[in-house]
Amino acid sequence: MDGALLYDLLSWMSPSYPIGAFSHSGGLEWAVEEGLAVDRATTQAWVLDWMTLGGGRSEARLFAFAHGAAARGDRDALLEIAELAQAMGTSHERRLETTAQGAAFRRIARAAAPCLALTMLDSVDDEDLAYPVVAACLMAGHGAPLDVALTAYLHGVVSNLASAAQRLIPLGQTDGQLLIAGLRQPAIEAARDASLADPADPFAAMGQAGLIADFAAMAHETQYTRLFRT
Image (cartoon, rainbow, N blue to C red; front, side, top):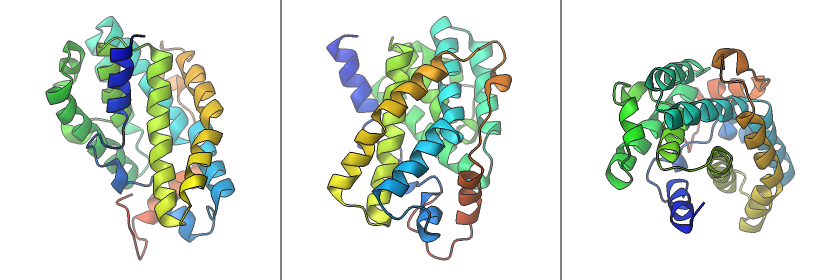
């Protein structure tokens, strides 16, 4: 991978990419209120479980399948993945989180990093477009290898959750960076695991055990005080 593509990946997954990620906590805000995430160790455990057992595991597979379809130029397969991704939203806030960021990512990418692959998603409405699908489509369209692209995506999500934890717990700046560093190897392994998933039946490749994280997203909808949208 050349330096220009690396530069682009860093830009697309940067906190400065204006998709509103800062306003989402993925249910972490409820976990903090309930005392499930109270310091670096418990927050890192929460994010690790989400990434390897819960919604992050499914997102990684959706990303991998969308990346493969976009790289092959298989529009029908890509649209099937897009439909599955929005159907995987286990609550109103889960769906809001992925589609709000997905729509914003596509809007900015069309202007800042256009590519032919993105046009394969033109028939998908903003409210039905999941973030991992459009991110994977853009990266595949610009030739980013799957393992590198997916690792970059997971790093972006982990970094945003660490940022949310810093504001919620609050978690110190150093602890936030230690949290991100502590999840480096699990993120690499999660990306590798997802890249090996069988794309023949994407639905069969789904599966997660992050029930508490899904409950957190549901409970957050009626949480009395909230800093985040989700």
